[in-house]
Length: 85
Image 1 (tube, rainbow, N blue to C red):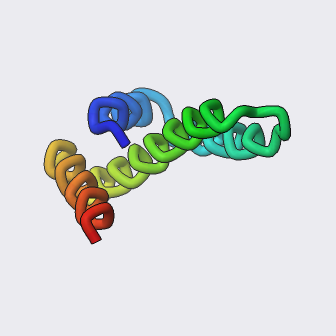
Image 2 (cartoon, rainbow, N blue to C red; image 1 turned 135 degrees about the vertical axis):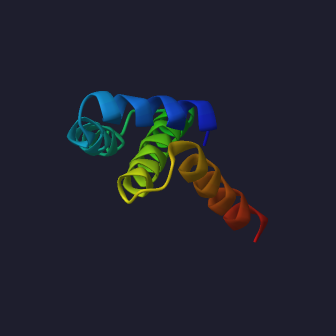
């Protein structure tokens, strides 16, 4: 996951609507079923999906009243904590 990408997607959600990301995630998840995709292509799609889910989580925190910068830092802290475990 990349914090700048998650931040950008969070801004996109604020300007537009989170439904755009939800529908994009659904489309990308369906695309992973194409049997001819190479591992590298699946990795890229997986990274995009992960960043979009991250942005949705950050947006959810912001909607609950947490300032965006703090929500981003908390999210990345959780991600890093799960990697270290």
